[in-house]
Image 1: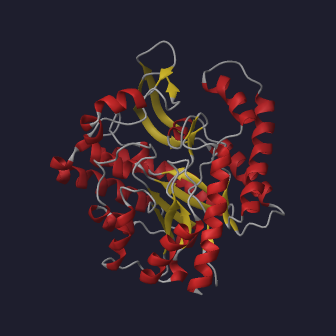
Image 2: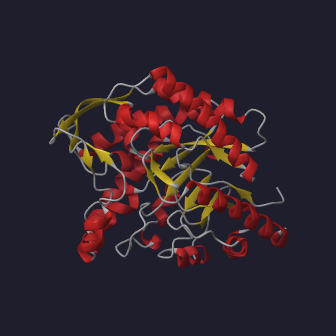
Length: 386
């Protein structure tokens, strides 16, 4: 391949017609299931076409088939959990967990939390029985919608994003298993069914894992050893879930949380890079446009990328409505390519442009402008590198 391929992290802003039909569904109100399925199918076909027209090589379904959020969708696909509500009506839900950032900027977060669009019932999901995967029907629907949308559009490949064990079970709310290890590995075993089904269908699977980093901020740097043990257990669970799946059909996405906020409590990549590389996937999607972490591309001057694997650096930010100049995108690509080799770089975005049906980080018109800038920057970098 004599060009820098382009992709993104998966989640795209949902179109109005899909949001309108999802809202009563998410609130537990009456809705037309047939109309929902038809709308979803049409919206996936359209968003895949738009990605291909922008020049994106490796596309997704925009995560349009997911409910509520990038991670909480899985609760509808797992058996063994019980929802215990502490409220009687849906309410705004805080998107950012407590931690260093919120202790340092309480006034900001008091205002910010009410603007993000996450709505749900207050309460907890508690494990009360054996965890089993039961999401075969919605997963098959998502696979079929994406594969149908790929016909004739000219994209090189397609992927479905799914959640990692750490982001399903950041905290242990468990009344069934005898240990945290047993609980986390049971979740990993269930998730493995989703991972394998996607790859067996001929698509790529991307595992999303924001909580791997977010837990560091929740615990605070003074509990670094505790965080390390927490993260190592969940990394090994993910390795277990990926066994037998061809690495070249897998990607691992790690970010520091999608919210556009200070992020001063974030874990440095140097403290987790060994855990990230322990995951046996073909590509690692890691933020590089985030102003809190852009300088960390230099970690690759000291750390060796395993042979046969690639990096998918975020060269476009999802948290600002400023559209990156293609020259800046090319610069971000080329400086990394000169360290690890251009054949090992796939240009991507930092995170998703939407974190669920009702939460978006940029206006959709700007999202498409950013993706076009990504493609233009990759073309500039390709001419210089190849």
